[in-house]
Image (cartoon, rainbow, N blue to C red):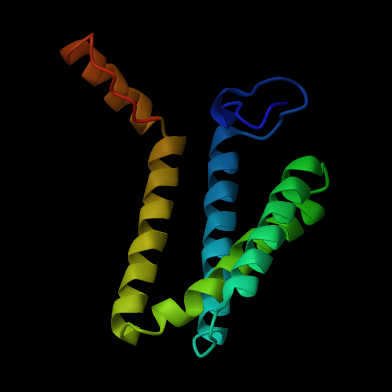
Length: 146
C-alpha cells in the first residue's frame, strides 16, 4: 500500500472496517492529536525555542512519520503519531502564549468542530455529491473537494 493511496477507495478482505467506522476513528484520533498538541503547547508556554529545539522537533517528527506509516501495529503507529503532534505543540507554545486564553480556546474549539463536521460529511458521501453537482453545472470545472 502506498502512502498516497486514497483511503476512501480501499476495499478487499484485508480492509474489513466500514467507511463510517473508519471516518469516526480518523476523527477521534485527529481530535486526540489536537488535544495532545494543545496540552504540549500549554506546558511549553514559557519556554524559549532556539534553533536546536526546532531541529529536534523536525527530527522527532520525521521519525514519527516513518514509524507511524511503517508499522502494522496500531499502538506503534499511535506512538509515531504522537511523535509528530506533541513536538509541534511544544514549539508552538511560546507563540500561542502571546494570545489571550479566550482566543486560543476559541480557535481550538473551531478547529475541533471543523474536523468533526468534515469527517461526518465525508463519511456520508456529502463531498462526492457536491462534486457531482459541480460537474453537472460545469463539466470542465476542476471541482476538487475531495
